[in-house]
Length: 400
Picture (cartoon, rainbow, N blue to C red):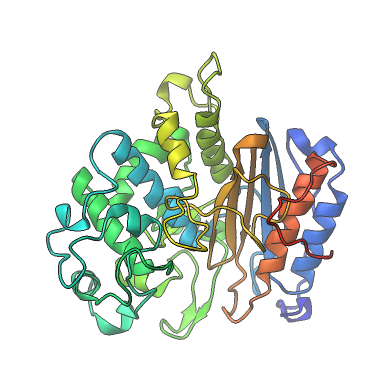
């Protein structure tokens, strides 16, 4: 997708980076991101960085083909599978900390409907690490006319492999885990997160099913053949749409600003020696959400080694080989990506959060050039902050 195809409107000059870190030389990073947008890897993007408590945000490009608005820290993006970590994994982590869920209990303890050959022994831990044996996906939106019938199909889906044998990234597993979390809490995932995380943190632009009043600042996603229109302000993922826009596998919308707040909240768990409470987003410390015990947060961010060649922690991923974290973030890092072109990586060793939000699926999901952009941005950010950083021992280093 060339800029010449972007509605014939040339965006204005790209603003400079903003925030406490803007005094550093970000020219290499911003030029790399500008070039990616100009070459069509995505219509636009917003980068967010938090380093030892100081922040930077930088937007480039435009919202979409027919919208030359420049994206910024308050532009709302469809997070896609970042929902799995910012939303679902966080709700599971809180539930584990409070004794509502046991990761090594069978799923059927919370969802009696989930039963069948080899299913009875599947645990919540296996759902979180994508080692349950469930298939990656099925087209629920085509097979079922309603949310209830779609969920019935998920419960009835046969395993593809025995549990605990191999890693297979599964949206179906995340949908099941959502049902278990909602059963444990006695309320919907959207309500859990709004009450326990997003509102207390002041993440006012993070929600499922954003209101129509947000439309002008939401980046559009795909020109969707199923729905027959460009999607803007409703979830891109078709199965999440069939589940009425609220699911643990996809459905959250958010901004770079809010995700930096979220990342800093998790980072604070790795600094238990801090003598004073950490404040977020101008919210009083006493009003902020309590973190789970640091040991619980650390466990969720630690690679599980349940099956060979899996880099998965609990819900989160960890860097390995040719990672979207790039080659320079530490081995302690954890993060995730989203199909629409989103990513977040958190590095406790260096007190670093890197958020990259794009709508690379606009106007088509066939645009697959986001991978090198994610890796390149991560490496440029680390080198700007830590010029002497060395690649991880297992990292694959790409030429720039």
